[in-house]
Image 1: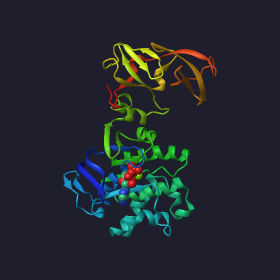
Image 2: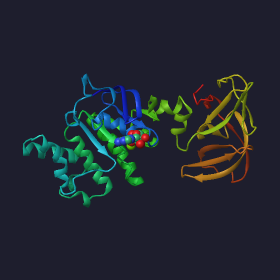
Image 3: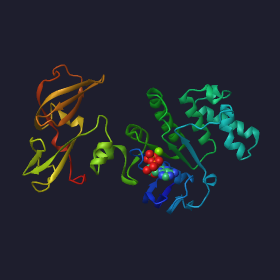
Length: 351
Ligand SMILES: Nc1ncnc2c1ncn2[C@@H]1O[C@H](COP(=O)(O)OP(=O)(O)O)[C@@H](O)[C@H]1O
Ligand SMILES: [Mg+2]
């Protein structure tokens, strides 16, 4: 089901949190709403779900205008960070609940509940109560309960935030598998860029109530429109060098002069400039040499992460396969892949 937010505006009293947002979620896609805490992600989800009445604009499900339709009549499935299972009911009863409300026949309810239990792999837990389940199991039950009524859209608000890191990893692929298997249109609210990148078809990055950019994870990573987006995606994060344009290059605030290839879009000399350099684009094999000192080495297993402090005190990061030939505090001359440098103007807009 295609969802359209058209000029969606939400105020709480005098405070406008979302101002005329337009956002389309395509039929069958999983879209991440990604942004820092407080930027308005949950508010947007609550509006789609119908928990919040919106202040202006329209919400369409397909061709149907649901702006003034009650939450129960929108046919949405919702999973929150806190699982909100009914504690006095068994797993089976929890999943059956939305169907009981619909007054389906007992045999039909059992059939659908069993089918759902199989889909989320909890067949052996059906007689337990929520208190007897791990966090990951509870979240599976919550997913089953959200999906059992065959909603037109699945809304997930930080569904993995309460899980430990191993479970989070497992549930990440589990949720994506379910979404692909059912073909349901889904919106995932998260502040975790790795979650958004790994689970979703497209990402909408939000900041202060606005959508800053919508793109596929790969496109967003390679072509961030702003410094904010570039800094938000990537782990380890991108490094920024602040300074000004010179003729044919860049001078950092701390004094490094870096000659840049013609492919780098430079504004007139003297203009404020920020260079964004991802850790995989800085190392022994680039084309723009730069001197520094290895100030930190983090072994990650397959790869090492090297912090390189430049003479000015600025820092670049490099990620590389394990290498035995550099040591902490060693002076190195490595280089940047010139064609991969991201250049931002003083407003943080990509040049
Ligand atoms: N019920 C409410 N009343 C007043 N302000 C609210 C309410 N809900 C959210 N807000 C405010 O709206 C902004 C966005 O909140 P929210 O959508 O929860 O952010 P996010 O989910 O991105 O962390 C915040 O500044 C928050 O304080
Ligand atoms: Mg939230």
